[in-house]
Length: 324
Ligand code: ADP
Ligand code: MG
Image (cartoon, rainbow, N blue to C red; front, side, top):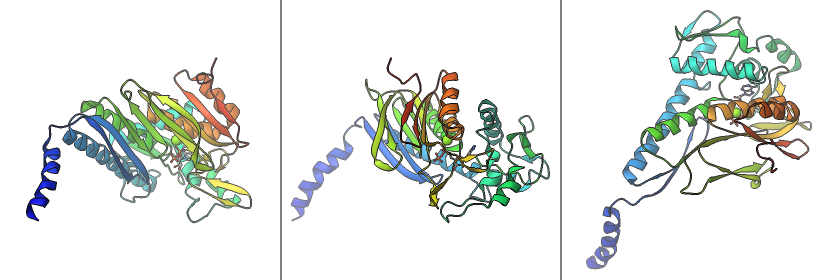
């Protein structure tokens, strides 16, 4: 009996102590309220595990800094006190809020982290939305120019009471970029990092591109397109992520800052570009802008491409993706 066990255990033991075999390492976790997936190639399994662990730690760190769900986060402190005066924050957080203002400027205010001044009144899990009067009252506080960032002093203040900010439209992309930089610094040359709808690809898949599929808005098992990618980022914003339907109307998490209501005209927007901070912010922005103005914006930005699913189901591609 004893020898039988040994004869099974021995090959296993040998396998485990074999020289490290290069292979793909895959891990998933739930962080930042979403699914995180890390896939990387490394010839040392120990290094691969350590690199993956470092990525997940980094995601936790960014979440701790920027989550509006955590009352102790620096972001929550800004929302609680920035109308009274400048709130000191990490240079990293001040920098990202400043970068968000840059996206507001580039998108004519479609991207606006102060959408949250009204946005906080929605609760998609509880199927709650603000009344017309509440939207009317909250809209006065929605304007990215109400947020004053002092990069030198590393402070953030609001010009008036009632302002709230939320980084949900950019933080996941930012975290993905951080993760990929961290992997590259550790010598990883082939990897894919995903946080919810935001992914970034490092290198290729050994002579082949990575392939990222864009799902159908109504069916996660069906795909509307497959995009081959190398050294690129891809973000999708959809009206099916966090939503509820009431009286034939869909209330979802992408809010038009000029109306305080869920943006219409599109079901999903996918943006492909060099980094995930940008593709994340721009996917949210194009969703707000709608099909015509959204595609026009992408055509002006040479390093970005887009795949849009219009409300009527028609799929639109930017010219960089359209076959000649
Ligand atoms: P996901 O969280 O599904 O990846 P998106 O990248 O599409 O979503 O961003 C949606 C999130 O962005 C919302 O949950 C909210 O936190 C935030 N947001 C919603 N509307 C705006 C807006 N107009 N400008 C900036 N951020 C927004
Ligand atoms: Mg986004």
